Image 1 (cartoon, rainbow, N blue to C red):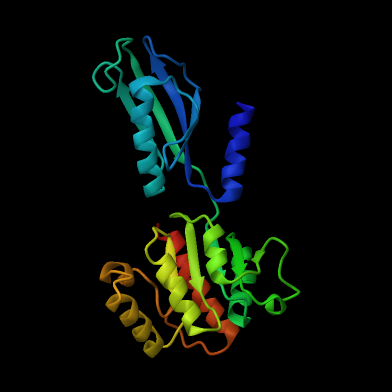
Image 2 (tube, rainbow, N blue to C red):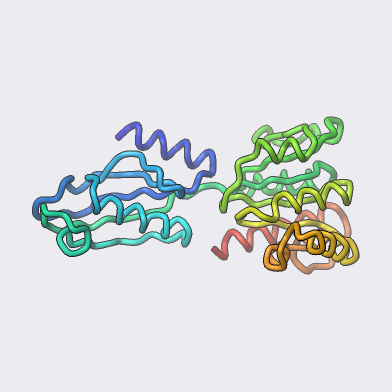
Length: 253
């Protein structure tokens, strides 16, 4: 059991989507008794067991649904009718998605990116700040912020992304922004947004569409211009606008 909770702690720290499944009630000849626990990851990898067999397979399927919906659920199974198990009996399983931090990847460590990173940490995001320019990183950045000082192409290659990942593109070059959007726009992310004027957005969107790099549906999912619609002017105000959008997205799931 200690190993199970150690795994849970690691999953939370890494922001890995998972669910804790607990056999809360059992009757008849069930393979495991109440209190048995199992962790299910989104890719259906498991740690621990609640008894194996068809019951466990059913629970794994339901756990993935709970992870996607970010909702807890209590499921009741008849082992004869639902799971097709000869042992008979009934089982109730409580499935609870693990509360994980959202992973925030910020491409661009300039004024807006730095302000956003510092504020996002305060609101419980796990922040990674990416820029190829070592001199641009502010000295007062919290130590909890992961810094990747590499070209964005190299950084993207080593990043692990999933539905728990939020990405903000705020680099100092339009070509960089376009390349990052092209690379990440095909992935299943929790959020993808880019700062830019209407003209810049139209130019990049048109180029990615005409070259068949991103579909219309993929382009539609991008939040651009990044942030909420407030009259912001300074880097700090723009960062507040962006953070407001991130919080709204996180809390609307």
